[in-house]
Image (cartoon, rainbow, N blue to C red):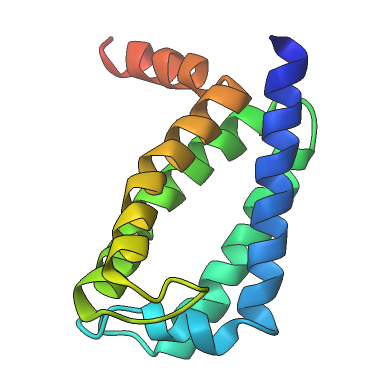
Length: 138
């Protein structure tokens, strides 16, 4: 099970690194299209900033040691934070990344909780959450 978690974590880290690089280069316009119009920030800034965050998260996930659990928790929170962009893509019917139908965009929404669980499970971040939660109750 430990080897499976490491492989899953490294895959997620690689995915985040790749997506982050895409934010800064080849997929920049597609990512801009997903930024909700109600967000009071420049879409290009949001895409660039989230790309940098994804790269940092990816580095944290492919590293070893105490940083991994923190990276897992941060990645899970990041996946929650970007969920409104995915909802916006579905509601507005925005074609991006091959998601060119309502059903494809809806299925993408269902995958977001999988990413959250993947980040928490593969990094054992749940243990970190329990430690932090225990300290906050004292």
